[in-house]
Image (cartoon, rainbow, N blue to C red; front, side, top):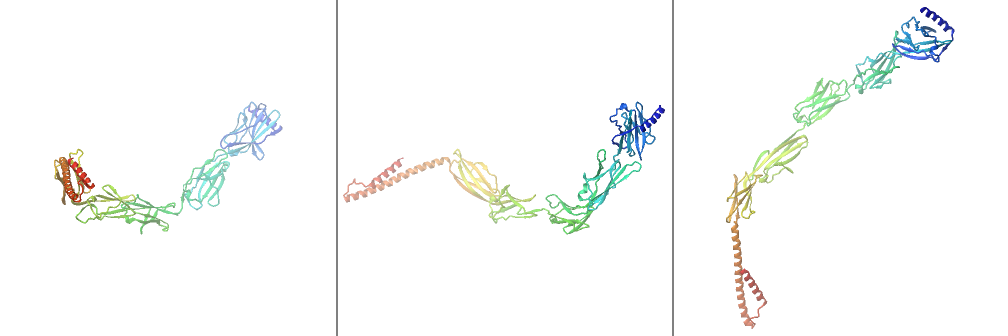
Length: 563
């Protein structure tokens, strides 16, 4: 069989030489490096059943070709290659050439030849082999970047690719474009002599900015086949000199005497300075390997301006004012104050306030708010009480008080009486002032109805009595300074009726006497009138108008007397 096949090959070769060739348009097939490439044999209008022999060959260059394999109708294919293709070529059922473990050396033209009854047809196919980069990474990265200085940031490498990779640098996912100033990109490609694969190296030089402190730098490439490739991100330390410093003051609010306050100096340089000068109201303190200084147990004298500066550049400084809040009050008099009415009748109040800011003052007397500060130009028992001042400044407040006690002999301010509701008893009231609290006594036994609380030197006693006769009742108040007594007349219920009877009898007796006097006057008047009439010859019955009126008045008084 092999002999027959070999002879057939010779015959076929003769036929191929003798028969005319029909070459179709060139087709390109893309294969991936290291994988099997299928190169189609397009028969076009030729019926597969009419194909007697199918042969594959390749272009060796310089006008030479090499045989790969051949297949007769209804026979298995035979490999005719004797070089590197010997173990890498095979034929598919559809007559396609299968080329395994593709390399860049396979980038050439492969031709499929088909022999029919009277024709030979050739179908050349151009093969291109692609390979994605093995990896994409940033190497030779800089340790740090300095602001304003063009520095080699790193090299992005896309290795073993075909065709050679094009690399793009990105910052925070945005492409970087060389501008000849702050961005410089230099790329070069090297080819492996053995495999023919290309390695692309892209060098980025970059002038950093302060905003690049947390920036992420990456590089990417878009292979001819497949998805985009992106390197791992790289971040860099951005170094720059200090341009500004700020002094921070950390303390509780409000800052009070006895508290602690921490001064902290912040510089915007990177790396940050490690030593600072703190100016403490004229005193210079150098702090190394730290950026803060704590003042303990502050006082009002701590209030003032504080500064911090760089050790290597004292002109770069920052300042802050520290205010220690304080509020002190002194009240004179304070505590319990006892005054006697026998002494001077005034009391001076003096409230002194020492504070870091303006304070407000309010007063109360016995927990009742006063409209203004109490003044005592003329002391009285009613001035007694607890006086409290409340001084407020922001969140600070202070309180003090004095308790005024005005002492003196008691005085009864009012002694009064009132008829009871049943008309049978009397209610007596004794209102007095004095201090200490006066004792109250009555000259008659009665029922105590009420004894008011002793407030601000005032007290009131109320008793109920049922008098059986008219009497005089006295109220006596006393303390260690003296005594006062007042009396009031109280009549019984019965004596009040007898008095009314006496009043009626007196009125009647008075009317009778008045009638007798008028009668006597009338008799004397008539007598004189008659004597005059006899002399003048007038009649006795010639009474005048005045006489008639007098008679009517006497008659009226007589009737009242009878009543």
